[in-house]
Image (cartoon, rainbow, N blue to C red):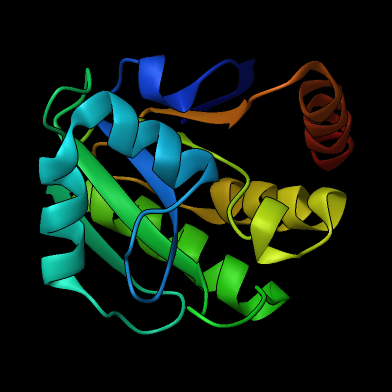
Length: 166
């Protein structure tokens, strides 16, 4: 399975599945969720909320609407009223990869789940995500991209990912 770190707006990416950094309610507010919601249209938010709530670390899948993807996997790395934990990031990442693979996706783009407004340390969160990607044994999934929005996050993500490969 190929793995790379990329930079850009997740809502502008092309992949079989794009991943939303969600909370357990699946309500789409700001950050990654806001970017996806703005680009996809209100149907994405409405369908996500209808599938929630989900357990911490679990996922729900919706159509991608106007996004250049087949699916959006909503990964609940944080509770609706709290912060992400190492366990919730491990579970959300693992369940995201399993869901994309079960949907016969060949490519997936995911953000730093549980970091940002979810309150988990960025570098530690990226390490956890990289560990889960490295441990995953896919059937169909062949291309996993971890996306950073800004220059600083991209540089840090690249450094952490490189540490994990060394």
